Image 1 (tube, protein in one colour):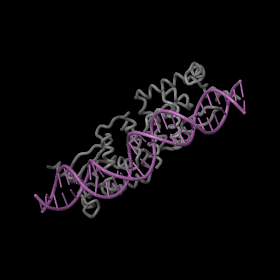
Image 2 (cartoon, rainbow over the protein chains, first blue to last red):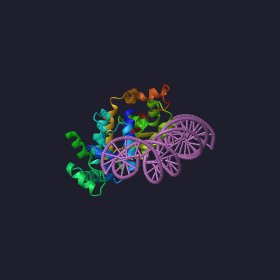
Image 3 (cartoon, rainbow over the protein chains, first blue to last red):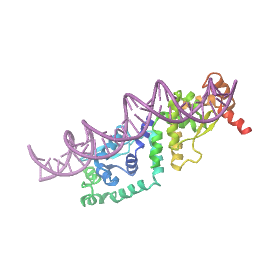
Image 4 (tube, rainbow over the protein chains, first blue to last red):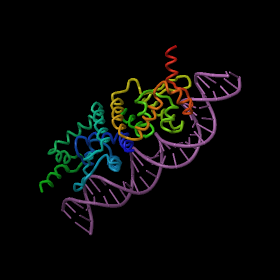
Length: 134
Length: 134
DNA sequence: GATCTATATTCCTTTGTGGGCATATAGGTT
DNA sequence: AACCTATATGCCCACAAAGGAATATAGATC
């Protein structure tokens, strides 16, 4: 039952926060750490949990693993992710995560943020675009 | 986090089936047993699980406990129950449950079905209406 | 009051999960 | 090759949950 698997993924706050943030666009692990304020192991494990169940996909970009929502979600997943979005909009935890994301997100500013002592990594997005430019 | 609690309730197939059937209207435990084909303990425990978390409500009717979806669901719950309905429509397990429900449901026919060796109980609906008539 | 029916609860075992710590791995840099 | 950074994995513990068997309870009936 795929539906059950989806709900199993959704029944943990950390994973909900991850998915909520991911709805805004792909992100690497270190940014999750920064945005959620949770230790690396925790984030990494939850991402693995989601990955093995097909709720997220990931791709390597040099040192970084960039996670994203699946390109072709099943109808059930699609509906549930949409529903999740409806539900998180009003809840402080999720709003704050998005706010922290936006602080980092403005693509070009990321490197600066990280260099200034944040997560300590460069922006995978910048890197990606430089690759794309190659 | 109420949302997490909701998803915890949804991440078990038996509970999904219960909720799916309940979306059609209130029902007593013995009918769940018959429709889902699961033992009494299992049904009863899952109903208890749902009840303590506010996903269902129940009311005594003589010997029967009649379960129903909450009269005033939270916005999150409302959305998720709706989403669940969207998702179950296409899945065989859930369709079959509904089909079995319909066989029993035609209110007046219930007593006959049960008397003929089904779950062995009378219809709480009939009983309810006779009470209402009192 | 004894008994029956419908349902709930308790006890037990097995399995899954979350979190933390330590360690492994992969790719990049010098 | 040595080292650094980002990320993943293995091991351990505590705990929640699912399922089954037996038993308890509440209300109805005789």
